[in-house]
Image (cartoon, rainbow, N blue to C red; front, side, top):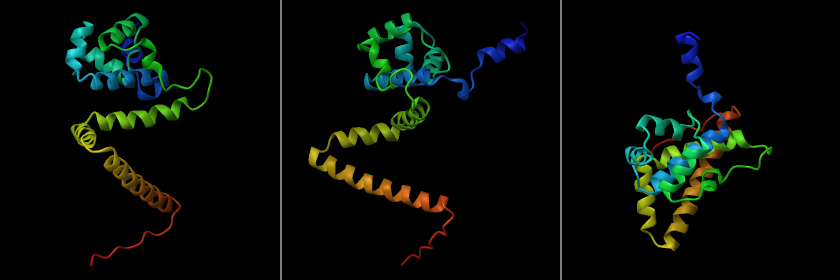
Length: 161
């Protein structure tokens, strides 16, 4: 097998990543962040390179059963925690679910996302509910605007007072 063939075999494009591998990787990332561990700290605890752990989190490399078992021990969670949220085997919806979760994880992994969550956690339950209501309305308005634009309707010009 030539060098080019090996590189093609070892490199995985996003379209080739199995949705379950992507989901498990996202769960690893969520649990690592919830445990307040950096990539390098968990990689050290797991005795793997930082790059290898990054590949697990993105789904580019599959996590073996024994490695997943060790990871569960390091993160102090049951092994089945990595599979929570997956549809039953053979059920539909696996592909669309993975992209939605990926977008959420990408945001909460940013400094802004973590800061937003930390600040919201400091609020009273009543204020949290109010903020959720406001954000829901804003999201619905944005979705409605997007639907109108996609249908080809002209956008309204807004004038500044």
